[in-house]
Length: 128
Image 1 (cartoon, rainbow, N blue to C red):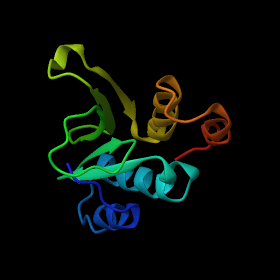
Image 2 (cartoon, one colour; image 1 turned 120 degrees about the vertical axis):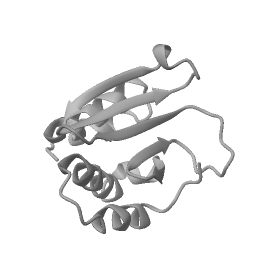
Image 3 (cartoon, rainbow, N blue to C red; image 1 turned 45 degrees about the vertical axis):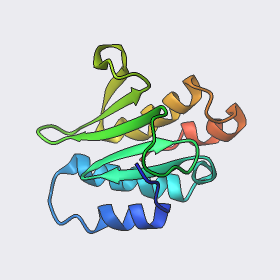
Image 4 (spheres, rainbow, N blue to C red; image 1 turned 180 degrees about the horizontal axis):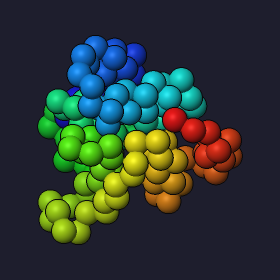
């Protein structure tokens, strides 16, 4: 994993020519993060269409915990998976409808206290 600047990540998703809505949703999520106060405390690394998010800039190899956002290609869903152990059965994971992905992200950030409530609260009422 090597983090990249948010504008580079946004451009990567915007260049996607296909019509898979969940992949376009990840692009909208990346843009929303890049345009919000979250961009100062979240760093990401794209892999194919997945997006790994961490709290600090990292370089390969990275063994720490991270949040992986994955498009569910056969459906209109985004999978959220917190990878803090190699045992997949013990990893926190949720799926969200594409239009609920922003809300799920804010909820995750709040639950793990990645940001103070005063940063997340104004963002929690926004839609993707």
